[in-house]
Image (cartoon, rainbow, N blue to C red; front, side, top):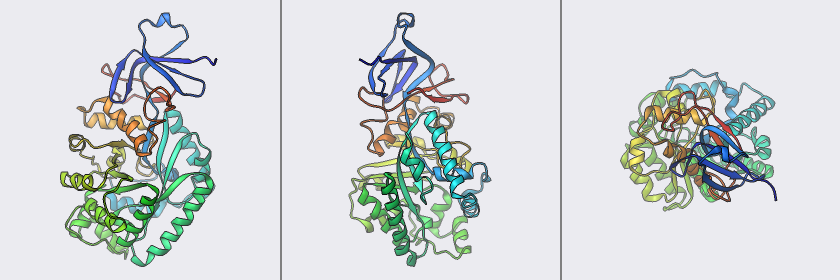
Length: 398
């Protein structure tokens, strides 16, 4: 019989609970065998002890790992219109080989830091070779753009072909719409229909006030940016951008939606938006990427509102074009620093189990339950109440 590995710490945080003096037994394959509590460590000579918190491997619920070549190249605080200008200027500076190498390096770093799975955005196939052989599970959302109605057919043909490349590489992937401001109504509905057919959508929703102004009144920096570039803009509805998305979904497929739908960012989310989404979506998840939101426009999502409504919140890093790192613990600390009333156990649920549920991987990932292989992660330099600090770091133990 293969010997088990016993791992102990000050605390374990799992499924919304903080447990003192945990000891986790795992087998040679990384499968959790049992979770208990220790009384005296000196009576457990074969146990590894780590100061800090043990938790399940993280799920990065929103990343653009193919943009890793943009690390350190963007100005902060430009707003969405300025950020889009920088993307258009800089995203193609690196060749395919350099991009793939950086994808490998950053996925390796995330894995070592404890990320076991990722919902990732791709616009091309430059990350596919790395994803196809990496230990980290990824579901890839093949994001499409196209502001002009006549582009719809051609864009959908291109993303369908990209999907075939992903299938050949053995990657779980499907088309997904980007956002209201980069797509014609026709393309938004067509790409949403393609994603729904595969059971999953990821959508940039209410990321900035500029996006809201564009839909509500046809005004603001993003509107001016689109018009200056000679691009068509979505119809002015007088309603939020999320409600516009719901209208386009209805054009793609009648409600209700049992598919897994991830709404990403949610900085301008309001109560009536939540009500409208929950009315038609049975499996809706809400990703927050706080450091990215601060990087671009110094704003944060309404976490208290989201908690009051019992939303299934997930945590992501976004990309290295809008973040200094792809570090889930730094995202947790940002949330804790700005919303200290949120228990650490809840934030870790967002960072693990909720993301796993979105990916339909909760049977194997997201919690330290017997029979699962979620990865075991240590978070160091916690405070006296088990919260992360500015010095906290994570490392994969299993």
